[in-house]
Length: 385
Image 1 (cartoon, rainbow, N blue to C red):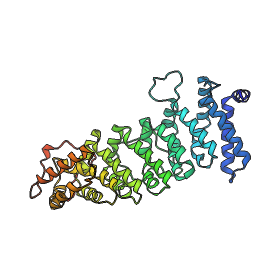
Image 2: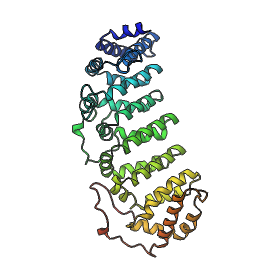
Image 3: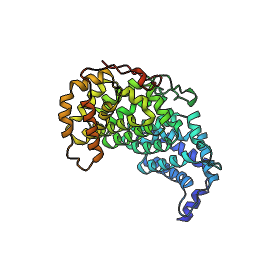
Image 4: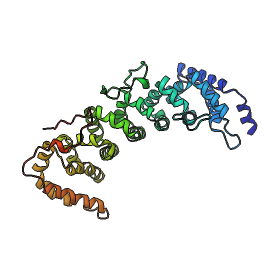
C-alpha cells in the first residue's frame, strides 16, 4: 500500500491538476458520464487529496501543496470543480470538499498573514468560484459539500462581502472586492437572495444546509452585516418575514424566528433593531406567532415580541396596537407557556412585559426624538401608521 502512495506522490502536482481538468471537461461534455471517465477523475482527485491532506504514513509537504495550488489557480481548476460538483460521483465529491477546505486555509511560510493566498486570489481575481459554490444549492447532490466549503470560506469577511453584494446575472463576471459599494441598496436579485428560495423550497437536507450557511453569513462578520442590513433594511426584512418567518415548513419557521431574535438582540445591530420594532406590521406578525399551534414557535416568537414591549421609545403605531390589545394581552401572557415552570428567566420576562403593558398610556404618545439613538444612515425608520 505504501508503494502505491509513493508512486502517486512521484507525479508532479501540475500534471495531476491538468489531468483533473481534462477529465472534468469530458465529464461535462459527454453526459451521461462513462464509468471510465468517472473512475479516472476519482483517481486523480484522490491523488490531489493525498498531497493536501497526507496520510498517517505520508506527511504533507508544504512545497508540494504550494506547487499544487499554483497549478490549480493557473488552470482555473477551483472554478471548474465548483461548477461541476453536482455531477461528480459520491467519493469524488467528498474528496473535492476535502481539497477545497485544505487549500482555502493554506498559508505557505507566513501563517500570520491576514488571509490565505487562495482566499485573496478568489476575491480579487475569481469570485465566480464562490458564486458557483452557492449555486451548488440548486442540486441535492452538491448542496452539502458546497455548503461545507462555503462555511470554511466564510471564516473570512471578504467572502461574505462577495456573497452579499454580488448581483451578476448568469454568464456575467461576479463582483470584485474593489467594486463593492456598501451604501448602495441591492436589487434583490443577487446570489444572496437565492438563499431564501433554497431554504424555503429545497428538500429537507438541502434546506437545512442552506439555512446553516445563511445564518453564518448573517452572524459571523457583524460590522459588515450591520451595514448591509441598514442599507437594505426594507427589502431584507420584507423577504425574511414573508418567506422564512411565515414559511409552511415548521423547521424553517422556527429556525428563522430564532435567527431573527439573534439579529435584533445583537448589540452590533442596535439601530437595525430600533427600526424593526418601530413597525406596527412587524409587531402584528410577532403577535400571530404567540398564537401559533406549536409551542417552540410561540417561544421563539416571544423573544422577538418582548423587544417591542421593552422598547422605552415605542412608535405611535406600536403603542396603538398594544393599547388596543391591552386587556387581551394582560389575560393571555400570565397563562402563556405556563408549563415552563423551570425557566425562571422566561417567567421573569413575562412578568416584566405584563408590567410594561399595564403602564401603557390610554392614548399613544409621540416619542421624543431626542431620546433615541441616532439612526444608522440608510435604515428606513418611518413609523408604520
